[in-house]
Image 1 (cartoon, helix red, strand yellow):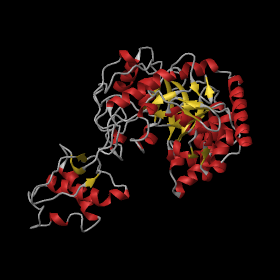
Image 2: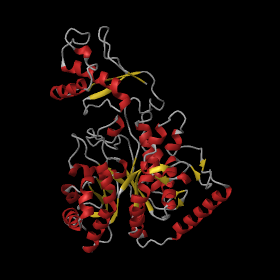
Image 3: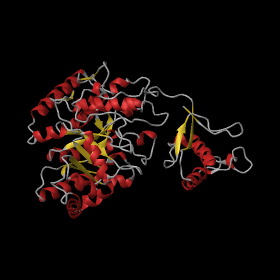
Length: 478
């Protein structure tokens, strides 16, 4: 616990940081203002039913987004973007970081292949090196950790050698880079990354006047305790406030708390003035039965209010940095049906795969929120209690189901014992019936080991008991 003197010292330091931040002259402030006031969209493509890049770019323009972020440097998409006024962010994939970090020629080749054919006609403004690489811990990923900043330096060297000075280089990190985030003044980086990775990264960002890119989702901390956590506080709709006990800064929403925790973490390492950019944020429009609060009303409310906040003129900033510009990218353009994991992973989109809007939204921020379309009343803002089963989705391929059935039954002899000939669940003899039983049984047996009711998109959750008097399907109790 802080002593009164330490608390007062932190408060004075915060005031000095804020004063320095506000007075720090940014040479390209006009450009920053323009970029920050134009809300961006993340264009992911992990789906087998998505529109073509040409159609997708037209949809982005229809939404009036000002910036598009790609998870690669797709040549067709970059060529098509040259015919628009959209700002563009491209990404170096994680699997190329080690080679680029070790070899300037590899960085040059990447720039020659992915930037020079399109710049300046395509308005590339950011190159992001990797995606949330500090969220992975295997030894191979730790090798990527040490290669990150060298790779970023070599990308900058290559850009500058070609006379390109208006493309900033960064890397998007998730909130799990922090050891502590609440209260915001306690923000600090994880010990294993603070000195070896974060210090050189912050030095690089500071020296190149770039941004700390953050993937920040208030949905996740709110959903850890949806009964006691204030939903309105997460959706920018609460009348309640939170006062940081160490700084006295007053918070009216969860996003500002999360952003400021990163600012305080950077400050503790000696870098109080590095600018923030939000590389991903949003709210899921649907999810699994146990994913409370994932619905269209909350998604629309969060994103509409976020746009209103981030397009305000003059800019609002955060309590620790009032008036600061924060470039922001919503996640994501589409619901992507091939993303693995829980149901929310496939339901962050603004648009359905056919291009229709899931809910009305105005990226320009000029329309009053009250003028946007009505929203369906949610039924899952409180946790579901009861039994849940895992069954085959409609239209699933029998060939794929056969492979999934082999997988589900292959891990344990107990999982599919009831499907043996003559046993209680053998009939009716069909791949769909057997797979539904196997999926439910596997999920019930291994859910506590992080198994999902997904099976490569072949399964879905249901609260309707799929069994019968003879065959009792195993279930998960929530």
